[in-house]
Length: 387
Ligand SMILES: *[C@@H]1O[C@H](CO)[C@@H](O)[C@H](O)[C@H]1NC(C)=O
Image 1 (spheres, rainbow, N blue to C red):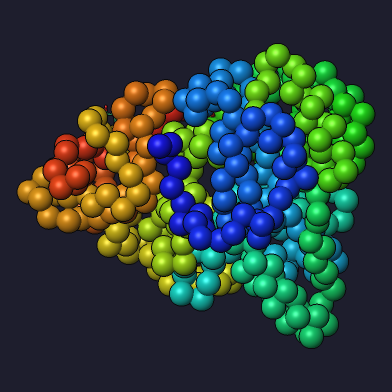
Image 2 (image 1 turned 120 degrees about the horizontal axis):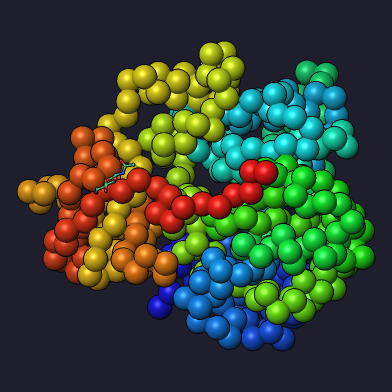
């Protein structure tokens, strides 16, 4: 029905067992169609079609409720050392209030989750990781915390109950600036600030998002999120958007969905996420799985994540990818018709011999081989605000 496929959707759990964000009643009042995602009841779309909502985000501004994501503050004077013991990024070199996309890796080099770590100037790291991984991420961090405390280090974890909304699209800055004292043009991509937003104090505004557009994520005290969302949505530029649009937007932007495109069986090198590994970390080989991951950077891997474009029938997750002579060379991990490009876009893993941009391959849709081409990503140019 909509290009939204995710392993984390647990079809058989009773509705009563689903977790609700503080915006749950608001979503229903706004005509949100609620579906289960990672144990949460979330809007997949509102009254507009998925495609209209997608295009609105590319041309105007949309609000997404992402309160289901795990938000954690890491405190203590050894917080950087603690976080670096879990992720591949160089956290030490981040400037104050700068953030980075990074990966929790395991000892086998697999990806436990992708996350954003921001080094705030308030004496803590602010971490946002995926809802579908919340239980294992918190357990993973707590286990390392126990080791660190036992070794005498000064670290503490604070799991936040704040709401989180993503405000995304080319007119976001105009919409948000109207409710901000601070000059939003100073807040560049992947930087963060505490601010009062439309009269709501204690909001953390981070210039990031997962649509490929300019945007922010705003972490808000739960008790004020409905009020702030209503104030933002009062602007005629702004519409609400659901998980359906979020998925096709991130795919056009070439961004991975954890559980589909990356998981504990894929390494950062296979996933073409080597850029997330800090240079110093690579040299020191001091992150989990470094003994497997670092040699892969030079030696190359047998398979690689690539983008695919095709015409004809939609290409979905688990679609087999075939060589020109019909041998299986991989599998699609995410795919949808691109609302912007009007063709099919997908990502998946292929034998490295077929990974070059422009390589002609095939995808097997409904038992038929359909021609497809390996493509660079992002499929749609990203428009992050770099100042
Ligand atoms: C990728 O390949 C396509 C042909 O399929 C070509 O038009 C395009 O210029 C190539 N892009 C890059 C960045 O090499």
